[in-house]
Length: 115
Image (tube, rainbow, N blue to C red):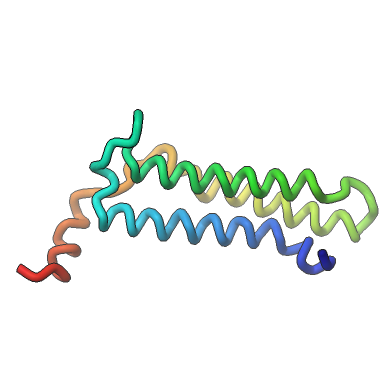
């Protein structure tokens, strides 16, 4: 893997994870996943938390694969990996503690649904 690819891999993992969680949130709310039970949580919550967890696992795996020593050639990619992992952790943490969909979505859906 090239130096540039190693350096931006962490932020790219964050960007992909953020995009997937954001897309699943919109799709799940529109499709009513928040009302479908999947074990102890809704299908919506399971999809969002599962995607977030996969992003965290990918970021941690990247961090473990990068060499711990070696000057700037190793330091910059590790800094990028840490940045991506921490960004994934904190920017997507609200998935765990906030409600997924609200009642305000219903009028917007009805605007595009034939009566």
